Length: 114
Length: 111
Image 1 (cartoon, helix red, strand yellow):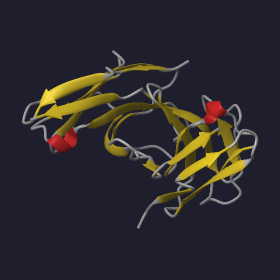
Image 2 (cartoon, each protein chain N blue to C red):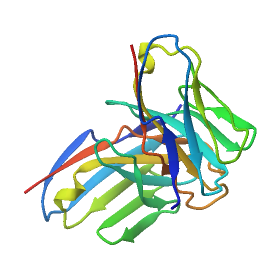
Image 3 (cartoon, rainbow over the protein chains, first blue to last red):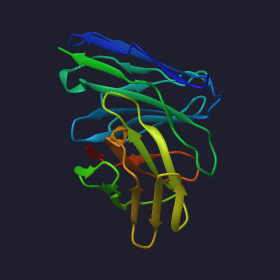
Image 4 (cartoon, rainbow over the protein chains, first blue to last red):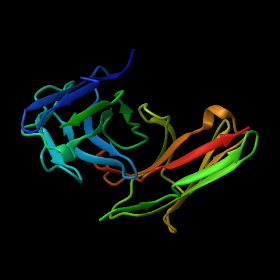
């Protein structure tokens, strides 16, 4: 089944404790992206990647890091989480190029930073 | 910067028709998407417009006017399961790249 898999789905952590949210897709998509969703603020893009070893900042990159060493994986790293990073995170992927390159989303990762 | 506006909430009756509007001002345009998101779930794709006009897909249609920076999603024969948030998103670059989402419109369908 074509899908985007995120882990963990739920996580409660404390301020300053480094964590990684993994994202993996099995559709051979070139493009991958991370979003956070907060009440009343919609989906905001954190980072995106057009292909292996190519990453770019989205609208809200502060406090996050990403890497794209393999085509299928795009982990989101919070080096020193803070309470304002409590949010629902979505990873998404799509094919590259022109046309209706629809985003396929993972199920979401709900993160709470105490 | 980018700006995408859609109503925050709408309510409609089962069996009726509802139109959700989206206006956008972006530095680039390479397509407008509508996604549906049920509470606590991931967004799923509904429709895509890159040229002016209407795209129809079953009970759902989407319209685009690039000169006006305007789109709408039309839902016909509303069902209770259509209660969800509807997200308008604009893709800016020609190679997937950046997509900017509106805050979403929460639609409640009542019996």
